[in-house]
Amino acid sequence: MSGEGWAEAFLEMMSVERAAAANTLRAYERDLLDASGFLAGRGLSLASASAGDVEAYFADLGRRGLSPATASRRRAALRQFYRFVLAEGWRPDDPSRRVEAPRRGRPLPRVLSREEAAALIAAAAARDEVKGLRLACMIELAYAGGLRVSELTSLTLAAVARDPDFLMIRGKGGKERLAPLNDAARAVVRAWREVRSRTLPKGDTANPWLFPSSGRGGRLTPRRFAQLLAEAAAGAGIDPDRVSPHVLRHAFATHLLEGGADLRVVQTLLGHADIATTQIYTHVAGDRLREVVTSAHPLSAARKPGRESGFS
Image 1 (tube, rainbow, N blue to C red):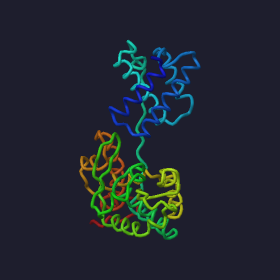
Image 2: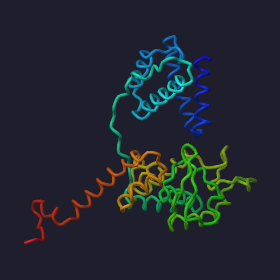
Image 3: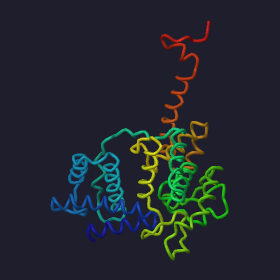
Image 4: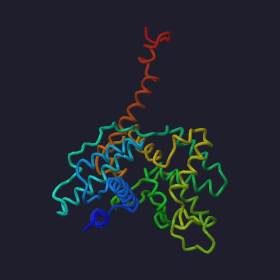
């Protein structure tokens, strides 16, 4: 079997055995194609590459000016591929094993304050009646439930038919979790359901999606939601570069921790397999809490030159 056949078998394994989502499979496919293209330039393939060739590819990722996240994902994809190939016995070695990826610090997630989140929702709702309500509903759901954008845009009308306190979400790897809905989110969902039919494409009365669209998939796309979110941010006086669908998920986690939520609970609500992924939010919440103490605690104020402490 050729290296191309190995790649197809790897993707099939990821789909069947690990229930990888369609977006994840497409990302793996792009990453393997990128590696194949580099190796082809050296007269090689995924099947014939040596450890030195893999090392050269990893070095090339850094020279291309790719973002650290993209380069890291491509290295990880190739490592997983070669582990699979080794396990299948198609190669006697793993050429990626001895190549160490460069260490990089994990960036802290961007996050909105509570006031900014409220302003974002208000700016969305202030747009024209129906589309504004739709956008406000999407923001409320993402922020109230910590939803990924793919989870949000794939919600069905049936999922909210009975005005639930929780949504059943199928996340990464097909894993299910419960996403909470507060009273504000439930209220805006009810309001949206009342006017949703006015956004249905002509003749598409059976459309199952909560946020329908006239596009090919019949529902609003993650990209379109991100565009509308950026417009709402500008309307709220927030730098659009600071706002994205995933930032709403970050805000959900950070604000829960600031409010005293247990880290394990937040991990469950986010659907993180590893608590280490969730722990990054403790740094963001901790920074915010330190700001509050510095600005509000009397002893902090007492230590600032030129200010009275209120103590004698």
